[in-house]
Image 1 (cartoon, one colour):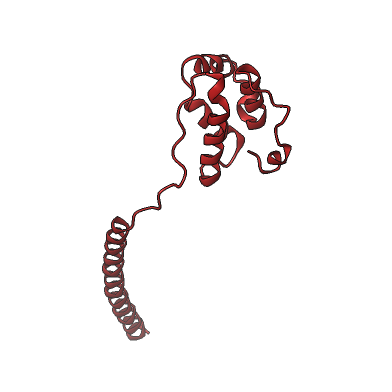
Image 2 (tube, rainbow, N blue to C red; image 1 turned 45 degrees about the vertical axis):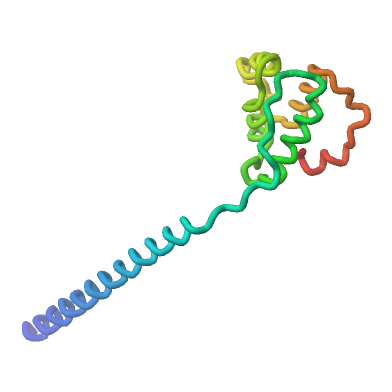
Length: 145
């Protein structure tokens, strides 16, 4: 019985040694693959965005339509970054300056629900900065922009 246990223990030790060697070889292969992947990633440049980054909006009424077109276009081609209304509103806020930035401060200070409603935020901007929305195409509401 003891001899059988010794043989079994010896077989287990041999198997352990073989698995340890195999594990070391696999780890080396993994290290080489990770290095190769990093090298390839450095060679590949991400595709450039076909839509330029929007300009800041300072509250000038005449620029509001242009600002909304720029930001909407940018969010459409980068839709993975703007997955909900709060992200879209935050993006718009990050591009406000001057009078427009001052206008948004009370909404931020009171944590207004409008900050998580893209359509309502745009409507407030249009109302405040003088864009007549009578001719707005309501079909765009279906896609969230």
